[in-house]
Each structure stands twice: as structure tokens, then as C-alpha cells.
Length: 343
Ligand SMILES: [Mg+2]
Image (cartoon, rainbow, N blue to C red; front, side):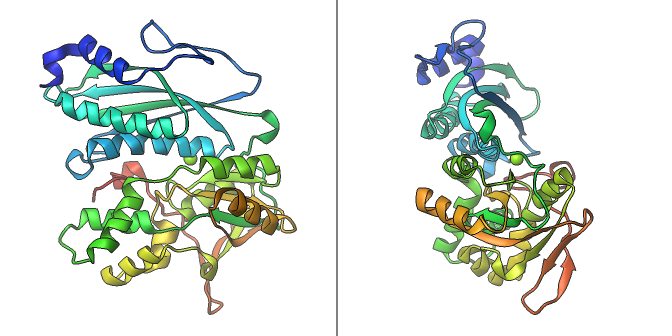
């Protein structure tokens, strides 16, 4: 059965049945002209992200369920980076007429699964026929207490630069997806592909960081550490010095890098799509914050460098003492194409 067989209203009815959402603070979910939501005394956080077939993903390289999960995870990660709590999503789809209803069901299953994991209610959306490829637009609303909001713009010289989890596996996974002929041990390949297809938004970690009131800035790693660190530096009008030997590079990424002849450090610095949290904290409190995040969430935090006063300075210091400029050459969706799989 194709989407053209059941039409827009048939599909909406079908999806609404898959996504029951009622009860406080959702006054009215799917089914009326708009969703009706109760406001809170906190700040609303609003973000959206459009994913276009052929630009951000290839349908033949990612399952519909994985795609659904990932588009939600990407948005959740942005809420995590503000120290917020995700609340509601609206999902808009542009569907080619020949799309199988089964495909849309699986896509929604993924969207629903990832949203449910963080108690996020799907409260509405829109459907349209697409004469090009598949288009998915997620609009996510979250909230944060004003006193716990963490911006990109308050890093200060002397602050430590910290990062959650591990880096590089997603980029290693993307390389294998783009080069399917490579001979890589299966379990290793599965590990890095999973990192690419199924990122974990760091919502609990973001909350611990925000509630501590210790962090001075925060961002999630979507475009690569070098590029995202530059965003903190620009917003805070500071520089940064990263110590290469302290970067928490994933062991699987190191193993794949060796097999494909790439430098593990490049995957960690420039690879993108790790969806870890990069944040800064005063030097006398940074270790305590790292420990607190680990104790409360089980996620490790590495101290990888320092904020410096020179606005134009972005450097990486190697183990042997060599210093090199840290180029901001992370993913650029318009220049380089797909984030899930591409050139
Ligand atoms: Mg972000």
C-alpha cells in the first residue's frame, strides 16, 4: 500500500492512532487545528531541523526506523546543549507519492521510540506530497529554568574545556557506510556504524551540567569538535588551546582509522555527528563537575584543553609539544552534502 492509496487524511488518522498523547501539560494533542499546551514559568526552548533526502540522508543507506530515531535525536541534542528538558515535538513530512505506507509506519515508529525515551509528546505536524525526495522536519520545544540556562557566550580565559563521552566513532561509521567494499571486522564495523546511525542525545548529562551552575558555556557536537569549539570561541570572544593527547577518542574509531589509513585525531577533531556535549568551566571547579556528571549519569567527561584570551587563537598541542592551528573544517551541509551518508 502506498501513501497515495490512503491519502493525507487517512495517513494522519493512522499516525494519530500510533501516537496517543493526552494529559497535562498537553491540553489537546493531534486532532484539532493546533496543539494546545499549558505554559510553564520557565523559558521555552524552540528548535527545528529539516532533513532532506539526497542532501542529509540517502534512503537506501539508512532504515526508516533508524532515520526516525536519528532526526529526533539530533533535535534533542540541541536541547541538551542548553541544559534543557525536551517536551513536545511536531513532525512535518514531505512524502513522494510512491512511498510505501509501511515505510512511513517504520519512520514514525523510530520517531516515537526516540521521543518516548525522553518522555517527549508528539503533539502535531503536517503532511504533504513531495515531488522530490522525502523531507522530514522536526520542531522541538523544551524548557529550562532561567537560572539554569547555559549559553555559548560565557566562556572565560582560563576556563577548562570539557567533553562528554567519546569522539570519532560516528565519522568512522560514516566512512564505512560510504565505502561499503572495505574489509573491516564485522563487530568493529557494526560498532562505528551504530555510533553514526544511533547517536545518544546527552539530555541527563546536560541537565547535571546546567543544574551545577558551574559551566560557563556549552554546545553539542554536530559539526565536529574544531568547528563547534570555534562557535563557543566566537560567541564568547575568546580563543582555545586543545591538548591532543587528552582527547577521548573512541577505541573503535582508532581501530577503524588504522585500517582505513586515517589519523584518529582527524576523526575526533573534524569528523562531526558525535552529539556529545562540549562545555567550559572555571579551572578550580572543572574536575569536580566532570566527576559529578560521571557519578550521576555514568558518562565520562574528559578535560581536553583551555580557553585563552586571544580571540583569533584556536590551537591544538600534540604530545611531542608541536602546536598547530585548529582549522574549523567540520561538516558543512551545503558544501559537503549528507550527514548520514554521502560523498
Ligand atoms: Mg547544536
